[in-house]
Image (cartoon, rainbow over all chains, first blue to last red; front, side, top):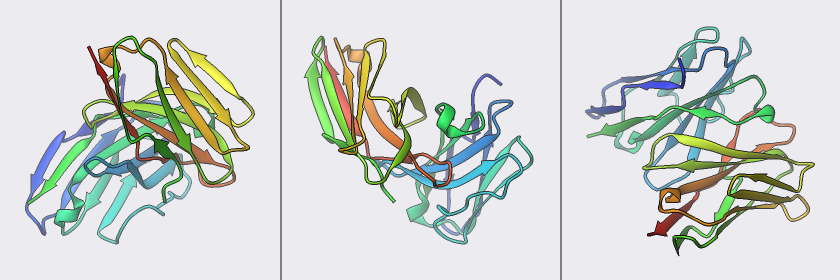
Length: 115
Length: 112
């Protein structure tokens, strides 16, 4: 597609439920990133995929968070047993190869509200 | 961990004025990038400046980088109401994993 697509755009879930967020990157972009942004805050790195290399999971805040990506295509971010503190906008971005050569292209995000 | 810190946190100016936002960071970098965010959703990449560059222009945007002071500035000239947004600097730390580390942003309001 022309841009990075994220779904759903909004998600309201009950505390304790699992949620799955989807990111469809730009075709040909080998690198894919997930960030979390709480209200009025900056972006918090979660996880980074680069081609077939092992992902950099250093930003995942707890073992309730996991992400998968098959090859250079769609990625899903799963949050198990959601808590109210998980409420945030989850942003996905993709880029061509090395981030040192250009910027990221971001999706519009998924706004997650845990009630 | 927070690498970039933008200053000021909020800036309000009149249309036509120039807006200057600053960013400081802590570790050596590969490059520094500026992004704009409207309405708390997706970010738009504005400009990238490499560690061996000192100044870069793109339209009404001017970015400077001072690696000795570990700081950068973003200047928007002849601002417009449509420039109202949050602006973030982000760095790619040298020698680390290839991920951008973002600051908390500057909220710019341009009044018509």
